[in-house]
Amino acid sequence: MPPTHRYTGLIDKYRDYLPIHDDTRIISLGEGNTPLIRLNNIPKLLKKDINVYVKYEGLNPTCSFKDRGMTMAITKAVEEGSRAVICASTGNTSASAAAYASRAGITAFVIIPDGKIALGKLAQAMMHGCVVMQIEGNFDAGMSLVKEVADHAPVTIVNSINPYRLQGQKTAAFEIIEELGKAPDYHCLPLGNAGNISAYWMGYSEFNQIGVVNQRPKMCAYQASGSAPFLRGHPVANPETIATAIRIGNPQSWDKAWAAQKESQGWFDEFSDDEILRSQKLLAEKEGIFCEPASAISIAGMMRDVTSGKIPEGSTIVCTLTGHGLKDPDTAIKQSAKPPLKIKAELNDVKAAIERNLKM
Ligand code: F0G
Image (tube, rainbow, N blue to C red; front, side, top):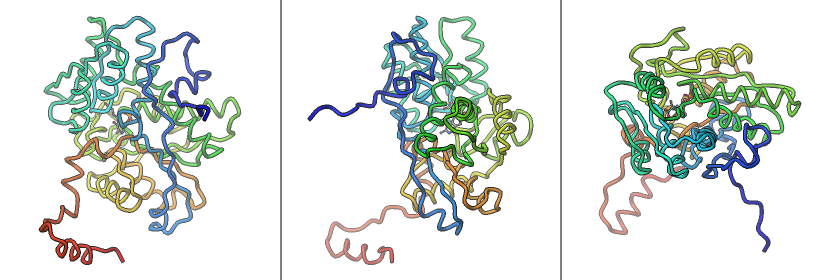
């Protein structure tokens, strides 16, 4: 059999739309090309005629959307001769930076908030052998340190203030347009440091500008109530939320996110930790899709806005699921309604358990 087309990552696929030279050495782990899954059961529960898709970014190589930006940031850092990269992170950026730096053969330094990082993300950073610096402070403190230290040490910043990150991340919008044959009417996503909303808006706008589509979605971005600077209108000093990925009080892409919201005529909204966890569980139980708590806020937002009619029936909606549920096993297990049944290793006991628990 002749070899079929082998997918080699998003830089290779979208090189015409990215700042890449023909001879650039690409650092890739096959990121991108993630599934756009149509939801079946949640729209039925809502009793609304809507087309909802989730962009399951948890299926990237390190299980979050960060890989889209990191393949670009590390590729360009290596091209420019950098031997080391640094980032502050609530977890996913550090996991991704660690993996891509390993792949490139350079050193990654990651600054993470003490005790406020999901276990899976810490495991990834440690496993890839980067230098993990756990600070007595939150993400925002880490971000300030990173910006300061980059002026004094030979390290390239790979947070989303690095413009190549957004270039890579914009490709998610390209993939959605290619699969739907149009831009969605609404795009729902979590909002933390605000890189992703800025990147999606850039991607949708570029394809609109060159005439691939003639419409852009309304951008609907959601924050955790304890960590909602965009809802308050100013930075928040001590952000708190169970969705540790978006526990950010001083977002770096502040102006870009406001521009995306205004130009798209979209909106920002906020959700309690309980609402976030309930939507995470609902998606897992009703659709078979496991995302991390921060990602589930896009489902919470879509449901609220569809129910209220703010998103009208007939709409096509895409929700980004930014990270995989296995990133944060502790939170998943703690909120699970059904702990494992403890039964004897005997046929009758197993049969009885099946009869008691069959779904009608
Ligand atoms: N969802 C997940 C799972 C994230 O990890 C992040 C950000 C966001 C949403 C928010 O995206 O910052 O572009 O608005 N995580 C960063 C990190 C801050 O360090 O991993 P954003």
